[in-house]
Image 1 (tube, one colour):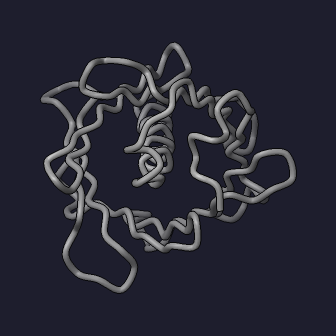
Image 2 (tube, rainbow, N blue to C red):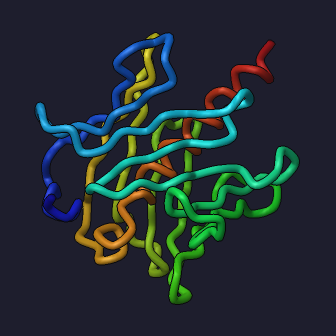
Length: 171
């Protein structure tokens, strides 16, 4: 598989093939890059498959506003996403002390993944429909995105959680 940075300039799409199933796919043209499936009664765990590797993205606790990431079949998380206090943005702590920032803008309809120099690496723009959809644009080459491609999927999961949370608050 090609590294994700090689798709710079191409339009990647997150799609939900069936509105009744909690499965999402990342595609470029007709090529399937990744699949994500939400598991569990409360949807607190996602099984992610990208570049022939399987990962789990999960909320360690119902009360915590964080996500942990681990390889499928392992117990210890290798990375975690923690939100800034009372804000939707946060930081992903990667192995070897590296960090990336995820900044969702719910009302503007997009989410950005930034490096420590505040440069936008990836932009995810949500589309409104009955099914979850989003366009992914890789704006800058990044070794971190190539090494940890699940970061893009984590940002999309954060968008889904925010959208569902905002819809519940509107009731």
